[in-house]
Amino acid sequence: MTAAGKLANAKLKFKPLTPGQWADFEDLFGKRGACGGCWCMWFRLTHREFEARKGDANRKAMKALIKSGTIPGILAFYDGNAVGWCSVAPREDYPRLTTSRILKPVDERPVWSVVCLFVAKRYRRTGVSAQLLRAAVDHVRKRGGRILEGYPVEPKKDKTPDAFAFHGLASAFLDAGFKEVARRSEHRPIMRYVI
Image (cartoon, rainbow, N blue to C red; front, top):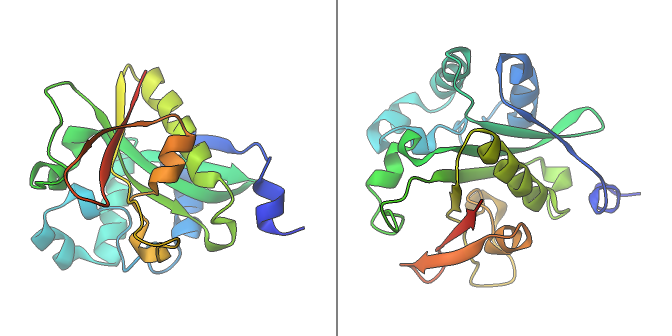
């Protein structure tokens, strides 16, 4: 059976990223740090900082963040292996959101944000993203958050190259119960889940 066939109805396990899961995170992201040495630091840094830290410096920065006690997101596990990642934190943890005209705040309400979804290549298009988003809702609920917001892409064609889908696809957010609340760009809705 293919990975897609196995995961279609599989129950994944989810864990917050803490120092105990660092090795799983590294295995999932691989030597390239998921995409071009990002290590999921893109939204946490200014453009200049990110460019200066690509690669190992970003890996070290993420590891230091986790060691400090910050939980920057959750991992999805299948059969004991990390197969997916969701970066989820209070919006203020992501400085790049404050400079985006497309993703500027919808209102004054405090929100948590999902800025990145990464799924291991062999498990893509199997429903892992929607399951991660549901787990992110639970994660935010347990931490007292009331609104979870995401910034997915809505592809022009039937398929978006994986490298451009790290925000998640709108269809996965819809599957997880999110609703569109704003759209300042044709292909970038702002979606929310109100807890």
